[in-house]
Amino acid sequence: MNVAIIGTGYVGTVTGACFAELGHNVVCVDIDRSKVDLINAGIPPIHEPGLAELLEKHARAGLRATVDYNDAIPSSDLTFICVGTPSDEDGRIDLSIVRCASESIGDALELNGRDSHHVVVVKSTVVPGTTEDVVAPLIRARGERENVGIAMNPEFLREGKAVYDFMNPDKIVIGGDPSSAEMVARLYEKIPCEATLTDIRTAEMIKYANNSFLATKISFANEIGNICKQLGIDVYEVMSAIGKDFRISEQFLNAGAGFGGSCFPKDVKAL
Image (cartoon, rainbow, N blue to C red):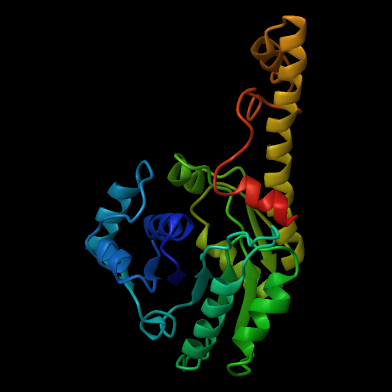
């Protein structure tokens, strides 16, 4: 299928390169000309193991980038919104980039004269209700089109292992009406992981619940670590033992620094 990726940051670049690896035709869109030039040269604008090799391979085979929405969306079957949603001063997510992207997508869809179904997919992390109450109205305000669907497909990528995680996921979550969700699911057909199809708000919430739970595991390990320190007990031995419980797993149980990174603090605040 033909896929347009809006945003060439961490999520967008990995998503675009991996969809190309799965056999899809990909065009990335970004307002930053320097990122566009890098991608067209087969050079990723971010560092992620395995990404440079994928991008170099598929840039030679047809993956490209542009600053023009009209150059990518009218000829695509699906458009993925992969732009940033940073925190504002109150901890709420800033949707200004999402709003701008949605408006530009709506304008570009007016140039799509085909009768085939086009699906706009939100991959950015947004609080429940955003896709239906913010993104969809902005896209449809540019012109009512019955063949434009809206979907939500959150990402669950770890920094440093994003390419591996995309190609070998524990779960694929897709929210949307049956027709749109099935169309998104077809993008992942070559990946041996059954997609969870649900409604849009549930898909949005799954992302926040997932990240909040992982942040909770880190905080829990640190609290146990404080107790162990006072009692002269090796917290790593304790965590290793309870991590053998299949209901818990060893992941994110290493006591130490608090949770951080680009996602967990932002998502916990927003929730």
